[in-house]
Amino acid sequence: MTPVQARTYLLSQRKRCSLKWRCREPMSRWLLDFSVQAPGGSSVHAEGFLRVLADSGPPVGVDLTVLVPKDSLAAEVEKMLCSRGIRVMNLPLGGAGTWRARLDRHLAVPAVSWLLASDVVFVPREAAPILCRGRLVVLCRNMKVWRRDPTLRSVHEVRWRLLNLAGRLAVHRAARVLATSATFAQSIPVSGSRVSVVYHGCDLAYADHARPLLDGREFRVVCIGTLSRHKRFDVAIEAVSELRRAGQPASLNIWGAEGEANERTRLRRLGVELLGADPTRGVLPHADRLAVLSSADALFVGSSFESFGMPLVEAMRTGALAWAPASPLVDELSAGTAVTYREGDPVDAANELLAALLDAAERRLRGIEESRRFTWRKCAATTFTEMEKAGRRAMS
Image 1 (cartoon, rainbow, N blue to C red):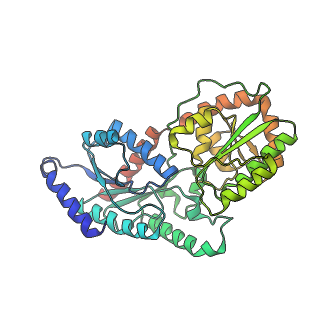
Image 2: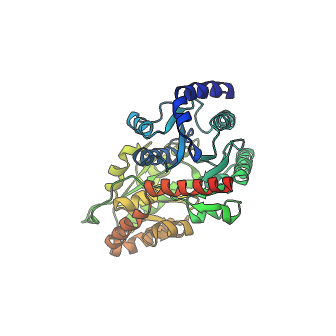
Image 3: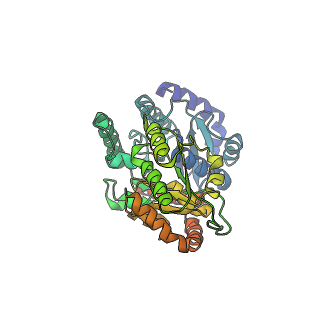
């Protein structure tokens, strides 16, 4: 959508709602830009956030507009949002991840904000459009924008520097900067007074008990995440191999889309070599995450190079052991319930897990309780509080 097309579309929408605009003078006009919903954490965040919004409605005194990609919302969610007086506008732009799509949004989203006379604009991504009207609130959630991926090849260095520059411009322009964890917030180059932590939520059902551990069967391990080198799923394969070497039967399933060329091939070969079978299982639909995690004994996390770690929280919620590298982020999210090991060391990972089996039931129960801190309702409420702060600063 070009700025001209956006203007034509908005004017048609505004004409249809002209009576509403004349009859109600809101305290503030807010724009939520969910026009980017890439597979994974981005789409899960959008769905969880918008479902809460559809259930509770906008904050009092706020005229709210939501931008979404075409055909991205479930029909019942869009209907509920509209019934709450929230405008839902489809932004028919290209998919996430391309420079063309980023440029289109850097033009179209500001055009929307100016035509709606927005006071506050919320953008849940680092490469936020800096020409928007009103106060900008940016949610940072991608560690790769702020810290160079240690597995990044030199050919991709220019791309990373451009993304880093886009992120720096956005947080410099923003009135409020939100981070998905306190650990991650330290990586964002912005003054602490403008940064707040807003945890992602989790929509999986709570486990109602700590299930039996082994009873002589194999220990079932899963990994969930994009197949990229920085995820270190190779360490998971080696750690499961070490469990078997120590006499503990174990299996491994790695779920995720291929994020880097040849990474699945590399993991498949290593799995066949050490485990005797290909451990990769392809993309895990969100609707199947509960079943997969509920049937697993542990979720393995291979890297601390994360901004939040949604699978770790989901594992805690469903009663699976979180098996992750010792790091400030894992400590922040799991509050000591995770089985931790020296990052990159599969032998230490296997030894720590075997030692933790003695108190696994207690860890699981505490993990379920700790996971109650992470809800989409709390995520949405905290986000709106930060938007209100930005709006009050604009009015002062």
